[in-house]
Length: 244
Picture 1: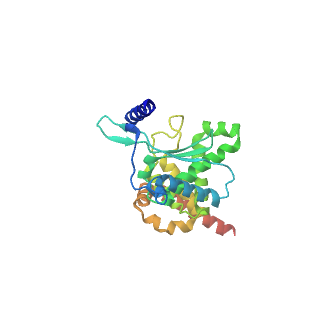
Picture 2 (picture 1 turned 90 degrees about the vertical axis):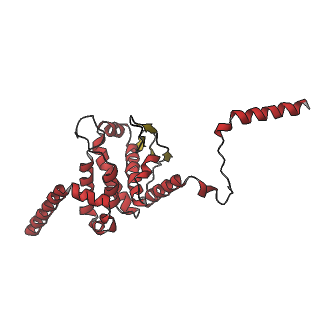
Picture 3 (picture 1 turned 30 degrees about the vertical axis):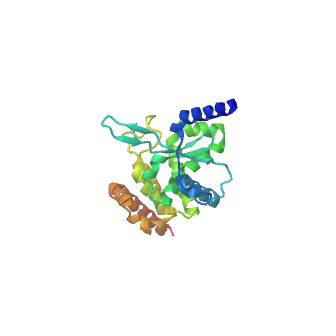
């Protein structure tokens, strides 16, 4: 009898102590368990695996999804951290949940993942490559953007999504030099990707994604840069014809 009372009291104490940590989810069974949770993680793993398998990437790149930190501003607005990053030390890629608010399709998610995977693969280059990446991050951000486009196309994703996604989340710092920013200006990155697509994957410039508002805004905001680039391309084409 004493043993029974002792066990009962321990159970009661345990239930009171940990009651706040218990989360009940009803109607769970082995058939619907995975449909009830982890959908964001499942999508990220599916797209990242498609990218790595299609590009025959032989290096390990662990992929994680983490909840974004929430902060309250002075006026009471709640904001979430919007970011994805590659950890150059352990070659992993982490996507923060706040980023999902800005992703509209698999192609845009593919750009985010392909960009960070490109960083992780580059980091396999050893100590001197690691030092170069950390001391000259802007150069490697631009390189990862272009590598991501190649990864995306080979995996069956539309590279225009890199522009629509970038147009939504890239920042536009006042200065594009020194150590005040680890990334180049968003406008510079967008133009670099546009030029790369124009030259290497021009067929995608006629895809339906170029009708999306985020792409139209890119065209409108960088109209002069795009026009100047097209003029230079025409001059190159004329010069090439004259030589031939």
